Length: 142
Image (cartoon, rainbow, N blue to C red; front, side):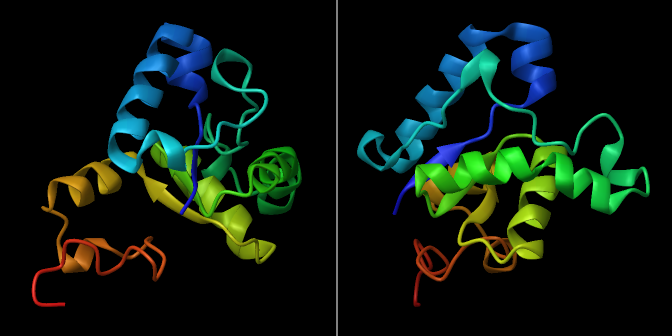
């Protein structure tokens, strides 16, 4: 399994910059394994916006939002990762929508979901956005 990560605009590019992007990668690699991580290009403070933030998800222009997100979708596809980890709720919703609307092969997953999964505390009802390859990980009796 391969994972990539979305650098949220508010957290990385507009606020704390590359140091918090490095912290994000440290956590992601600790959870999924460094050998399973593929970084997007460009990344960190130069990563592309997903197109879902700043109220765009609720703005009532889904076609425009999805068109703007096409660059992000292509960026994720170019990694070949099966999962895009999203620390931000807006990013998660947009990236999940982009994968569904175009039938792209990646799963969108919240960072907290993978942290909980790695700790063995992710409940059965909290596995909605996991692919079949992760749904039963750390499920006792499964």
